[in-house]
Length: 408
Image (cartoon, rainbow, N blue to C red; front, side):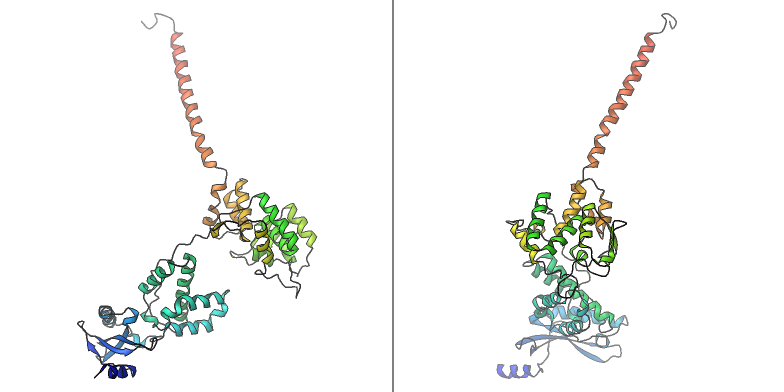
């Protein structure tokens, strides 16, 4: 058969299987449905628990599959049969591709997520071309390592971590829905370490200049920023605040449904006067949009961005951890408390940190009590030495005062 005839047969999906040097492993020329191009497919044959011969497509050469890899997969299949495990063909989700799994996940679960568009974009940009055509059970931990390495060359560790998390979530959801019964390829894959900790905090002069610039631009965002700077509240927590959450008698603010649960914020005199002037109704949001009285959109913070630019706070700054964003106000609050000698545990309680490790970031700003304690060791030792010397001198003086001849 000539080459043209081979391609024709391959296009019909009937490429002749050729034996390889590995037992039970065959190759054939066939048109890959994903690429539309002639490709080499690798199949394995084996006997199931009833002795019936079975064929299974392992994958294509264009995806990195070769005869040794197919042989290892065949070995794993035979081991499973020997152990009485259910053959893949009988497992839930057998033959389901990652693209098909994504479609199910997108319909059933994606609407429940806070930022569905971001997850859609990550699938489109980083996962679709690489995995959409691949069967779920054929995607391995090594594939995840390859994805991680490729992404880290161009993208931040945070983006890579989110993308790997997306893959893990898709697999786990399909397992929980009974639609897939197999391995999760992200298991055992080390997630990239992410250092998003803000290291920049404002000086009092910078904070005053920023608030002044905000006041000239937007009273609402000035007030939101003012409250965050004086309480350490997150932007979302400030915008969700209602009149019923404010206790002027007790001088407390109830922050409900925060990231780490509800907590109490204590008012300063400045905050009390500030909130009394706003005098929100019990059921009203403290900061309302003019359209329907609902909460201000947290993304509508163009005035804050403008004020930061006006004050040149990010001029020449390239490290994103040092850029001034709204969260910098909360970081500034914590930093100022630490510098004032407030114990780290108390700071964590005030702002609702989810872990002690988050609060430890401010330890370098605290007055160094450890150095002060260590400095006390010297005086203690000196006091002990002085006591010994004094005791010796007293003993010597006592010996010199004895009557002569008594001890001769």
